[in-house]
Image (cartoon, rainbow, N blue to C red; front, side):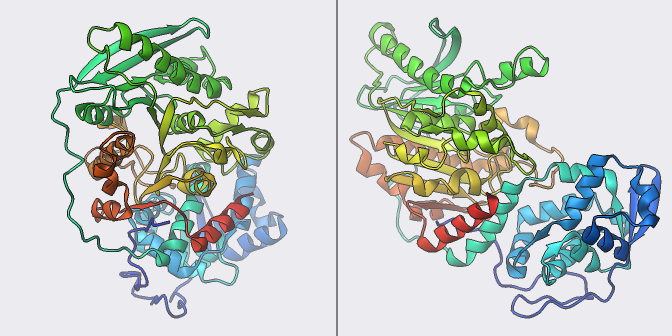
Length: 552
């Protein structure tokens, strides 16, 4: 697949400490100094531990006598976390790791780690980078011990409380995505597109957009559904109706910029709220008034879409403004995050829950938030569910959850052209597990879009992501790329969504150029490269399968 990290491939790592020299085509040299002592701080307490004692703990599982008093200050869970961290080994290629650490994602990870190994005590981004690269070159691969033993100082100071916070944020799928991106990058050299565009699809259409708010009641399921219908006087029944499905704990304005854009080009857009998984429900759950996510919601969400299409059929016959403007067959579903899974269900993807129920009974350490959300479906009584709506003729799923929900073959039941959107720095629904691994199972025609450096919230309307700006980093990724930082992402989403829905109109050929890899590269920026493919190459598919097997 043509998703290429914005790395400076096969170059020396610049500005690593002057005491070491790294060249990706030669052996990595040892640091002039190497840590022999770890100074551990917990609150106001501090103790020194020799690296030899830590290695003994890792190899034998027994706490050396000189560390016993300190170990008694920790809970059994904390001791277990330390022991697992000491035993963990990550087989990373030094060149791939060097490339990763040269990206914005890598810098964010290093910056976050400086809160564990404080700058004031000799820590810093360059020292951490040096230790990681040298540690990865050790025979055992990168581990806590190889990192410490490669640290370019005689001692390493660790803030244990902060370290536990970082460990708590570990996300296996996210890290696998980053290693995957590093592994495939050499195969994905960009091609300079050379063609002239007929027009700019990111610009609004000529029509003034109006919004009609509806409060619909599905009495059969006791669901009150709020809907915003975006339309213009140019709307005609020869263009498909578009329905939006939002993410967990969110609102129907998730993609307002996109609804307005499509409506300005003559489409009718219905953005609804799912009452069992919207922001109101989440707030009530936090107050202890209801479950955060009931298993039935995986079935009710697609049924909400089908119900809204039924109601729009009535409006098309009776509403003074919308009468004769709404075409319900064909329709298009656009879903984001949890809504992405909703979109795929409506496209025909079958819920296959036997594997999910088994996985979700086991150790959930390392699960992403997206995988945790899918585990809620384990409470459904049946093993399989088919929720396809035949009126839906195209599907766009942005950052969807898929890794557990659709089992081994559920995605292969999709019956309509489908576009999947992935972001390489998404820690909520990590791209490798949730979008890339399942893409080969989807029947063609299909498209996979990758935003290199994009995050989970990047495709959302700025009005719904303002509270994410300037949040503290986690070890999983940097701040969410939103607002002005994500303008190029939202512009591309506007263009490719418009091109996708236009394939159901007489203007299909006019918009086809915007569904090509060349346009994706033309839409790229230095900060956010964009890649689009319709198939994953055999070479990259092999890499995908390797990562999948490691994750089982």
